[in-house]
Image (cartoon, rainbow, N blue to C red; front, side, top):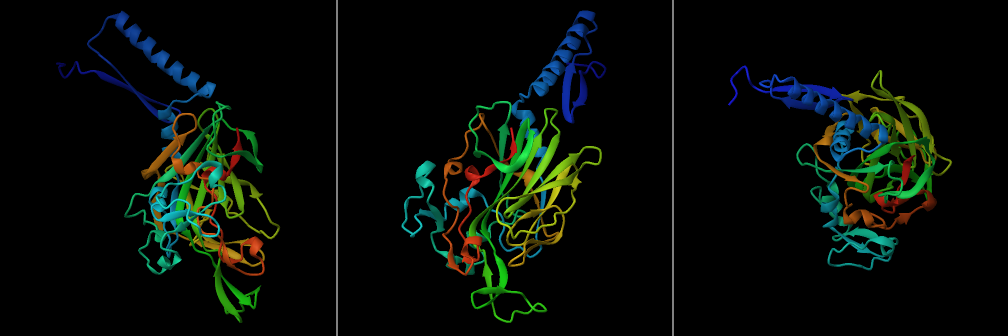
Length: 384
């Protein structure tokens, strides 16, 4: 046993914000032993430096980084449709063809090319929306631990199979990343927007009143939202990408102020989008602060009302409601290291086929829109 004066000492320090602790026995006064300790200490530091400069990172460092930058997401004050674990969602849906024919009554999820034209339809139909305790209402993260799915693309291994579509977005960042971390949040239901119609044509509200008939369009089962970070070799973020409807925005990290600054936006399709993004993504204790829009769950970097479509005029509204500490439950999948879950290989739609469409069905004016595609069908936001 050690006496009080002989207890071993810890050598503690941080390297690039990561804590490192080493122990040595201070009973040893032999210069040879002290020299040996110093050699071990320097070799350890050298290995860490070589790992970072070479672009090869062990799982502990990568997992710590994923936890460190996981965002704080504020759900809207009147949100009715909360996030849910994908695994729970799959217990309540059937894989079907577009005509409704059930493909797998035994809850076996088809994967690969054979699943491309399929849909996931609630077993009890959409009438369960009348029950505010159904699985489509999700789980309040204040009361239930809801997972966030993290995919990590390791750019130091260019031949590694990717979770995402191999194509980059047409306007993806052209700067090469060392690696990319993407946080995926799943909601079982997306609530559409209220519109005014005169016949089959959308019409404006006059002093907040509809002179025709009001309808809610753009509802759909299944909703994946995500943010992505690109990192440099020194483990600091270079850019943050926020995906919103058919648009998105890149924010560049300013290490001195610890905020992300709006640098450019992405328009994926269409000509009727009009969006003014907030200028900054602020952080709290080093984490990005984001706001999920009511019903649609689009992620914005500041509370408020944001118009994202000219015709018809559609807006997202968000504010401080329910805080979702996403880092509390992360499921991390690193390419080449972790086997992805089976559901990531499903290539079909995560919801019902579109129904009850109006004049502009091609731009999504349907009471029920097609369910979205899953993670594996999304294009990369950054280039390796």
